[in-house]
Image (cartoon, rainbow, N blue to C red):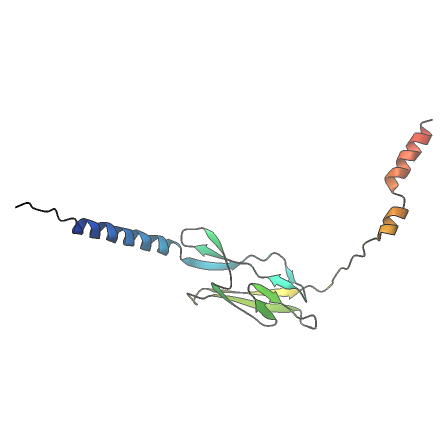
Length: 149
């Protein structure tokens, strides 16, 4: 009789190696810590203030985190995704924001962010003001031509 080679154990070994390698990759992607990397030093009332939270992975890389991975809370306002909305009627001078990693609540950060106090509203010139106001550079060039005669 002809003996058949048994290939099942080899397939099982390869499968187990793949599972082990996949588990190693997944573990390498664990969030070790989170940090606020805010785009501004103050919050504006009546706008979406993006609260940027990055996770430092166990492999040393940084990854941006969203409300899919983070639970956001704050002492005032409401969150829409990563954006904190502060009502224009808010009279406080600061808001405390807390970010908690959903899959490991032992990892969290809290930050106090001040409210922007003075809104600088710059009035832009109208088209008529721009067109009817002589520019300084044209005056200088005309003077230069005249004085050169």
